[in-house]
Image 1: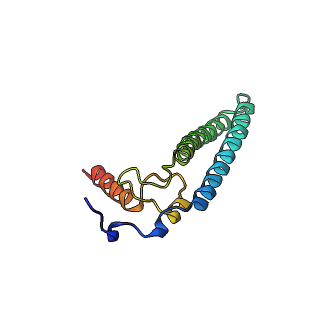
Image 2: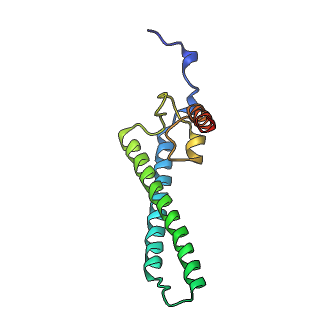
Length: 135
């Protein structure tokens, strides 16, 4: 089975070693930031005790606490995605689409370093998801 050179993506879609190194440092910085912020938020949440306020103060405090906990959960999930991306870097699989195996592209990874799909596969998955919700 021979492959026609026109079937290959342009060279600029593949990540250079320098681009991978840069993106790895971006991922490491993001994970450090998220972990530091999570520690600070956890400390703030455990220090807040609003049991001595009136009912309105307690309700507002609980609402704010719930919002912060949901945000912390989203950040926890992002930490997991970043860890997975760093594992893909270590395995030499970073920047390759999990669906089609093609390159994800440097521009897309700069915008979303944890991306696991190329823009075409992600667009197709979102269209499929939108149709599934509509039925």
